[in-house]
Length: 79
Image (spheres, helix red, strand yellow):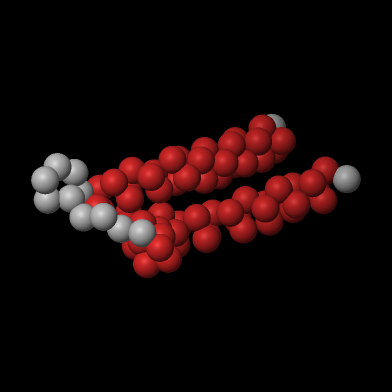
């Protein structure tokens, strides 16, 4: 039963990471706007603003290390 919960935990983390990676392009579009009032963006400043829209960047910076750490922890427990 414990193995089942480990797999569910890892699955939830990976789905969260994937959903945020999919949100990044949408965040960029929403931030720049659509239609006649849209604003072009480029460069590092645009990249930073896209990661802060919907707080995608901070969420990914927490989820990815958590996923790696938990995967390693569960591997050690199985040995």
